[in-house]
Image (tube, rainbow, N blue to C red; front, side, top):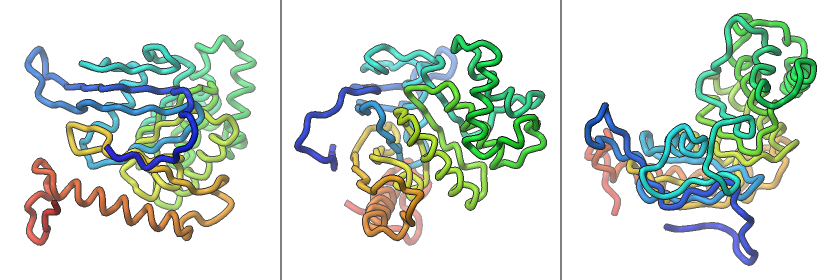
Length: 284
């Protein structure tokens, strides 16, 4: 495994640590039919924003499910804050879909995520209102999901995830359901929210541009069964909403490198639809 990370200092203690993790999925009580991850190892210190990038079907979402405690590894270990993971208010999750309660207002959707925090009803309402204001939805607190655009729904989902002020935030391609313009705006909203509290973030994406734009480090995964094949420090200055990241020479360099790496992985993967496709050439 190649690790393109900065050296010279002792690594920070890990908030998230996966070591030698393998995970397969069975149908019914049968044998393992799909090995999603094999010997997957990753260490993420507290406060770091990590993007996970790789070919389709390489096990990126499985990593999040393991970290959230929704599934258990077949082998290896998963620790969050030094303990086996379990879902709870200290672990936020933003999904591909909005997953809002249709009969609840925007504020009530956010407040619902705070029911396990020990806050009373007024405290939950106040915090929900605060985070809706942070994502620019102060005037839509009483609106129902059916009255909101896709981008506004995703902002409610972001507010809901951050409202419990989790130490760990897991994000599974959260912006795929919105248009390109809204996606860029949502990336900025996310970075601003993250800058306030510096939660530890694992962000799954298929977008090279998005991975670089958001993260401190990009983790590149192999085709299934997924494993870490490279970790790349982004090295772009923060705050990234104050300048055009896309014109930065470092961004351009990383974008070209990662696109080439993913292309090579896909073209050389026998299980890929593009393997041996007319006009493709296989790379050693």
